[in-house]
Length: 245
Image (cartoon, rainbow, N blue to C red; front, side, top):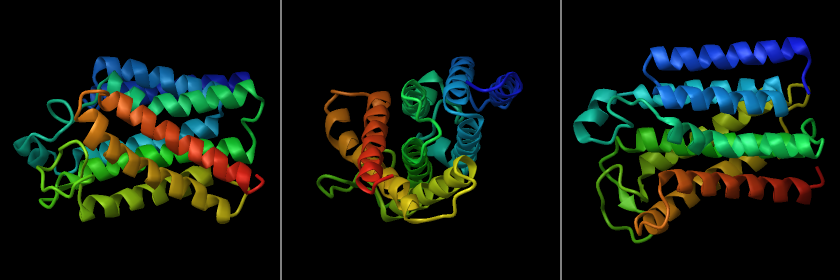
């Protein structure tokens, strides 16, 4: 467990982020509470560096959510009424990272390369999906990933070349930032490719599930996000173990 000083800092960071998110109307009250809870779990059972990487991802998500928000509102593809996110959005992106932190703590591997790579992969998938979704809806050339049928932007399972480009950017950016935060003493090496590949693959899987299970009503958006991120984290675990990490 972290020191008393680290615990105090974790509490302050989580509280400040939650209050600011609520005051700036980035999160609803339920979203703010969920954000505090998820942040505390990750900070206490993972590390304060894991929490730092999560905060960077959260800020990035808020930025892309607000980007050209009025256009999104006019076309009806925004989150909430004005881009604000609820506890469901927070859990969609934070549940699996929190579970990874708890599992790493329970197995005393929170400082290992494997745990770090798996956690970064979870953030990579969340970043890839969030950025692709928030920027991809601005493209007018959206097609269903399973059939190629032309669909409206924001349709479950809809993808575009523009959104796919940003999905790759999101996976790469989150992986690099996560690496620099969580493994600061290790230079960038081939293991960095694991969260990049797993994160982008998870985003693609999210689109496939959106075009099938979600459109059929078998899962909702939260379920889709959790499943996709869990698959991305599992892929990262298998790749990291396979490479001998």
